[in-house]
Image (cartoon, rainbow, N blue to C red; front, side):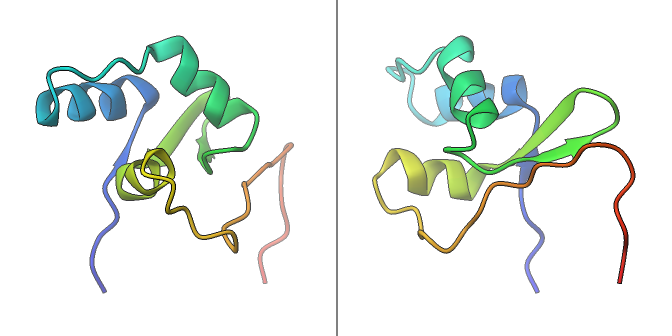
Length: 80
């Protein structure tokens, strides 16, 4: 199974701008996409969110699979 390329908001934006120097997506716009759940993320720690860069690219290309649901967690969650 391939490893997902998970990045912080800043890391994902940096990667996009390295691949496309003309990328006009701002940190604020990407943050809003993540917080509203339009781009799924995983919360790590108290406030850090990680984004799968490949899913982000699919979203920006209009190809995001509608079965992907945003992950929202508040506190401790049951495992299993």
